[in-house]
Length: 386
Image 1 (spheres, helix red, strand yellow):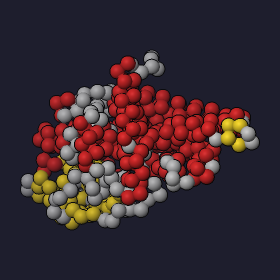
Image 2 (cartoon, one colour; image 1 turned 45 degrees about the horizontal axis):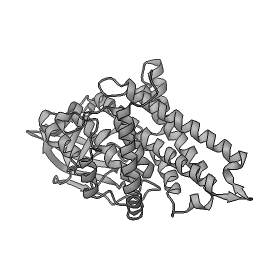
Image 3 (cartoon, rainbow, N blue to C red; image 1 turned 90 degrees about the horizontal axis):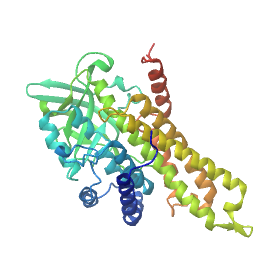
Image 4 (spheres, rainbow, N blue to C red; image 1 turned 60 degrees about the vertical axis):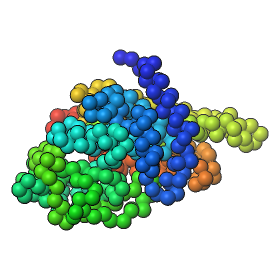
C-alpha cells in the first residue's frame, strides 16, 4: 500500500494545475456569467494537451492511462470551476465510458475517438419527471421497429441538454417491470424527433447547461443500442466510475476553497494581526484539511481498487457520499472565514459553495449512496417499494 504518487503522476498533476491556474480563471467567470458551456475551441485545446479521455484505451483515441490519473487532472480543473472541468469529466468518467465498455464496435469507433479529440461532446440522460432516485421507474420507451429503434418520452435534468452532440439515453426497452426492462440507446443531437426544453436556471452548475429532452417518435439505427433490455446492471457498473468523477468534482470545490482560504487568512488582518493567528480560525483550517484529505484518499482508493477499470459500488458510493458531504461543509466554512469576500460574486468562493450542493444531488443523492453502501455491506439490494 503506497500513499505517494509516482513521479509521472506528480508531473501530470503539476501540468494540469499550471494550465488550469494560468488559463481558466477568466474563462470560468465568463461561463458563470453567461451560463454557457466551454467553447468548442477550448475543448479542442484540452484534447490537444491530452486532457480528454486520458483513461480511454489508445486504440480508441485516448491516452491509455489509469482512472487515478484522470481523477488527479479532474480535481485540478475542478478547483477552478465545475464548468471548466466538465469536458474532462464527460470524456474520462462520463457516459462515453458506457459506450466504450458495452457498445457495438461500430458505435465505439464512431463516438469514443471523437470525444477524445474534442470533436464530440456526449451527455447522459437518465432522470425523468417521475423517475429520479427511483430510476427503475423510467417510462421513456425505445421500441424496435425493423432496423431502427423508436424512442418516445421526456427526460429531465440532463446536464449537457441542448448543447451536447449526442446522448446516452436510459429508457424502457421491453414490457418487463423495473430494472429488467431498462437499457440504453445513443441518440445524436440532430436526430429528427428530438427537441430540447429551455436552459434550466439552477442554484449552481452555471456553465453546465441542463435541459429536458423530448422524444417524439425519435428514430435511431438499432446499432445505436448500447445495452438492450436487462442491461441496467451493466449501466450501473459503468456508472460506478462516474460516481468517482462526481466525488472528485465535489472534492475539487472543497480543496480549491481550502487553498484559497488558507492564503486569505494569512493576508487578512484584524485587531492588528493576521486572522490565522486566532485559534478559532486554526481549528476550522485543521478540520477542513482533515476532511479534504480523507475524501481524496477514499476516491483514490476506489480508483486504485477498481477491477477492469470499473470501481466497486461500495468503494465509489463511500467516496461520493463522503466527498459530497464534506464539500458542503468545507466550502461553507471557507465562505464564513472570508466574510463578505466569500459571499461576493466577485470571488469564486460562493460559486464553489453553490456547486458543492449540486454535486450532492447529481448522480444519486447523498442518502441514496448510503443505501448503496448498506446494500453492498449485507450483500443484497433493498426493495424500497415493499
